[in-house]
Image (cartoon, rainbow, N blue to C red; front, side):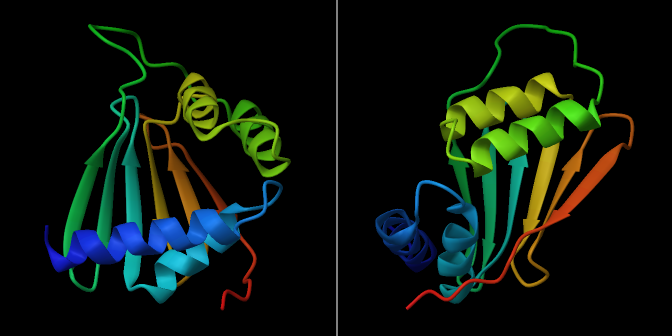
Length: 138
């Protein structure tokens, strides 16, 4: 196992131990940032997550949201925001959030841990950017 994977997994374990159920994403993001993760790029519907870290790039393959050939949903900003608010309120699991984002037409999202932003993209160049708050993680 590479140092990049070890470092990423340790940061993820730390984040899961300290993050609150409601509004927990900023804690996860800060733990990853402190561990040297610069970006996290999610590809939907494949559920592939690419982490760009100071130790190297790491990819995680999750369970795909669809199989076979399917139509890509139209980008629906309001549906995406609803999915975000549901997740931020602790009323959905991460897999449910990914599925809701896909149904809202998100094909990719990019977390910039330095800028504290998450950019969500549709397949026709649509974009929605949301900032998240800075938090203290010991």
